Length: 373
Image 1 (spheres, rainbow, N blue to C red):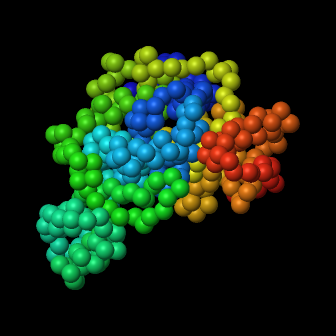
Image 2: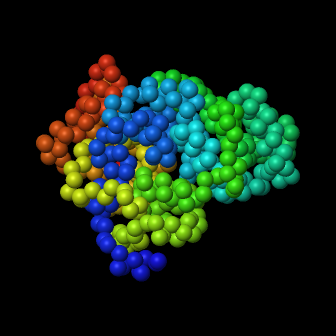
Image 3: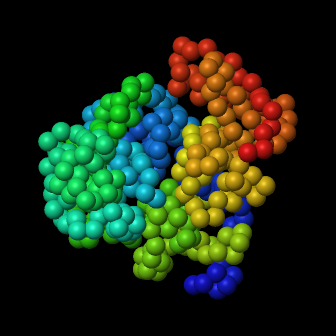
């Protein structure tokens, strides 16, 4: 069905999409799910920086404490690995080993962009050697460049290290990623770190159909283009078409066809949506090609500066401004002009977030000047 032929499907406006998406994202009400169950349901948490997965769960789970995720990471039940959109995510061990093969086509595209620096390099041999190196001991990218450069001195050292990352499922080992800890990025294979074999594409990677269903459960209702943007993949329409008899279809505000699970929640658009504080790069803001279900048109482009994302907060379910921690002060920068009641609601949520994430610390909370970013 094309966009024009979706005209007969039921209409979901931006507010209906907003409430449905917030519910799937565990942001409409705090969820009692366990941390591993939430990470699995959300298909991972954006983790370009160390702290975002922790703040992402604090916004979503009832009674979350950072040490819960940190313990799972130390116990190798979750790990940090490059997957969706060629970016770092925190995934369950199972998803590290299965989603990584699914997104291999994106890794192949990335690798092709370095082909000039890899002239004369046997990539199969490089993968075998890189595996031996990182499984003997975790290696930094700099150490990989040096070791691989000794084998291929005429190749671009950076391209060699990128080739290792693209051909192997490399995870970041702890203490990197632990709450309150520090450590440089050191890599080994997911199989070695997690103690189990990885799925080998294409036979043992999850069928795209399975991931479509999981995506809709966490991000739906959504279009084919939405999921492709979320995953960093193309050519997913055949999977949606195979699943069409099992799915419902709707028409989005722009007329695009949206797919959804029949039994998935689609709350009343009037359902209250409390304020939520989100980390930079939260997948709520990155999980769709059309982000109008969360980002009002007048605020498009306000969450980024260069290639860096700002921390954001939601009010009434929609993007409403930015926040940051400066020394002992949490600064809230609304895009609009909140009423006193709205400020009180946002402040109460800020206080809750600080108690969870920084217990015992003393922070002032103030509203900053509205800044045009």
